[in-house]
Structure formats: structure tokens, C-alpha cells
Amino acid sequence: MSNVIAFIERMGRDAQLRHASQGEVQLALVNTQIDPAVQAAIIANDQEKLEALLGGNTVSCMFFCDDNDERESETDLEQCA
Image 1: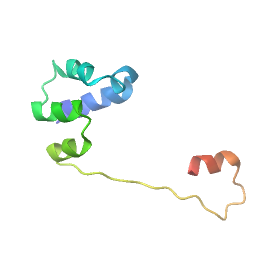
Image 2 (image 1 turned 135 degrees about the horizontal axis):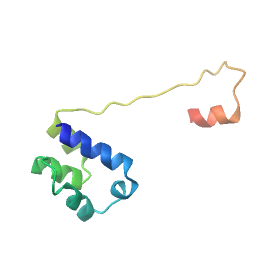
Image 3 (image 1 turned 60 degrees about the horizontal axis):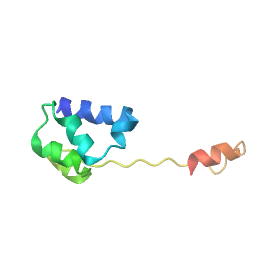
């Protein structure tokens, strides 16, 4: 699984790979030792399938701004939106 995580991290760091076509992603996966089913999920950009194959699940996180904070600026409000 560390190969999968390393590849996904690489995709996150490399803008060209992150926005690459399916064929380009497939070429980038050629020399990895990632299971073919996992490779297919990555190529298809299928998050649900990838999570199922890796035994993970989706986690969501929300942040709430304090409405009582009088020091709020327009920038602070944009960050909370």
C-alpha cells in the first residue's frame, strides 16, 4: 500500500500528473508495483473503488468561524467560506 500512497502523493505534488489524461496516468503507473485493480481505479479517477480496494473510507471535516468575534475582517470571512 505504501506504493499507492507514494504515487497519490506524487500526483498531488505534480500539477502535470494531477491534470494528466487517463493515458498519461497509465504510463506513469507502468513501472510501479501497484496492483492492477488499484491502478485501474486510479486511472479511472474512481475514489470509491480505490477506497474499497485499500480498505479506507471518506472523512469530511468542517470548520466554523466564531460569529461573536468582532475582529473579523473580510479576509477572515473568505477563509471560512
